Length: 438
Image 1 (cartoon, one colour):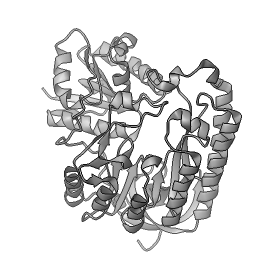
Image 2 (cartoon, rainbow, N blue to C red; image 1 turned 45 degrees about the horizontal axis):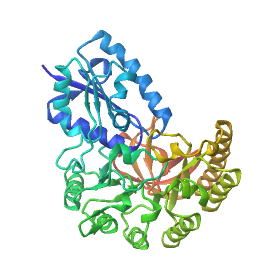
Image 3 (cartoon, rainbow, N blue to C red; image 1 turned 90 degrees about the vertical axis):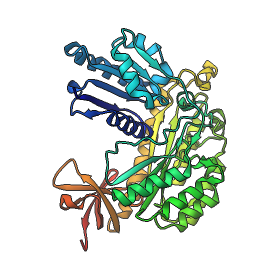
Image 4 (tube, rainbow, N blue to C red; image 1 turned 90 degrees about the horizontal axis):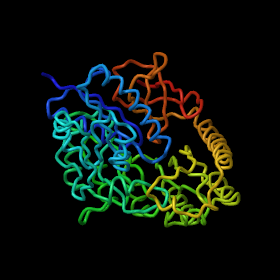
């Protein structure tokens, strides 16, 4: 009898990549994907633990999926990823219809865990962190034939006081550069993929033996068939001049970077244990723009962190105005059990209404700057990699080398191709464009 699965993914791009890994493991064991959870023998929910809202959303979704078990009692439901790792057996108490709780280092054993759950009256839990597990030798079931996300690193050695990642994914583990280059080379030569995004928790801290991140990035950019290279997310501390010079000198490396800042206040950065100052961060931005004048910058910012005073927040607004990001992901501080920030004194807590007001002011500023920058690009001619058909109209969706989304008219055969287009308009973060010379 054929075995079937359904995977849902919540959270960051690392989770998306992990879902591709899980699907690859299941496919190698003879499972086939179905189009709805109602058809699946196994339902896997791959989760995020960064914010409380994300966990509540997952618990709500798991409760919804319990209706599938009521109709098909033999269906197995597994919660995977960071939330599973953080809660462990507690998750069973919160969602008693869950059959499996599987942490990020247990995906290689998915078929065995599923088999165990099918024969057990109790839920199966595997949340052991494995310092040696980096999933070498396993094939991902990639969703895109245009771009490929390449995990080069798992875990994190930084200990930012707000972040749950070191607790859910363990210490930094880096892959052998030889296997990374072989994987990318095969995808470029055999599958025709031309864009590659190197993925890691603090990706530019990568080191394996004598190979550091600038060396790996340069080697990837020079592989035959590779036309675009990106990476995410770097840590400001590991952003060196050597790395930026590699970016500036290799045509395949895109002039775009997501560089999390989190706060513009030295006092808040210190309590966050970010290990850099406002001045140091701005110096890195200046270096980027000196060597790559057309670089597009995005960032992450948290407001309402314990102890953030009005003056601290104003410094964040000032930094955003100074850097003028192309985009920013903005969040209210969310306490995560097990992180040092939850042990800070109660008097440091920022009231919810204050944090929400700050978030709204920050979003308004970020959108204003992004709109101004995007408007200044209208009329520019650029190269767009067509990724897929757009959700609305008879349009295609693609991205520029600076990671701007562009909608253009054209035939479906253009998917996977590079099209020269003039940017004709913008609304929000998306551009409209028209192909020229195609």
